[in-house]
Length: 179
Image (cartoon, rainbow, N blue to C red; front, top):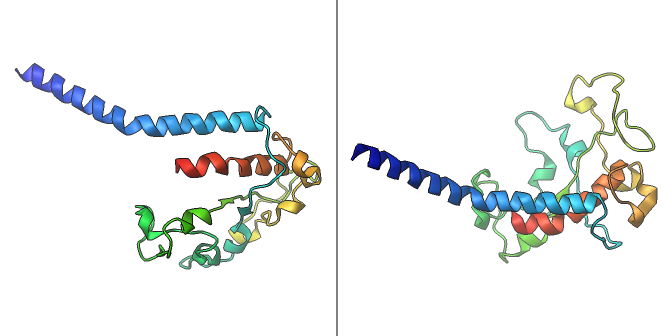
């Protein structure tokens, strides 16, 4: 009797775990496949560039117990209370007049260190002097000035910083519906 009870319990826990992980694994698989297709040019992209935001350079000077202005701006980093995000303090979420507007104004963000970057590719394989504080680190704050941006809509793959950011921008189409 005891053996049957333990077996039933283990089967129920295994089924519970399976149900809880099936969807995230499917989503991760989908995101990984589409990412690979985009990086290796298996999917044709439009000439457009999905708008991306950035706030790393702006946030690096924010004090230890302060909130960065980038994160305070609900038009740049929307967080609707209706999302019931358990990782967000309910005092920092916003109530939007239209329940879909917060999703519509979401943008992918990018961050990349500019300091010691190769001027052709943007790769950072060496560092002259390590930064002793976040304020000393220099970040890209303009996509148009990234190495490889002269390619424009012809950028693809991952050879330059701009290539990777452009491909990453296209992932918003897949990533936002999943999350």
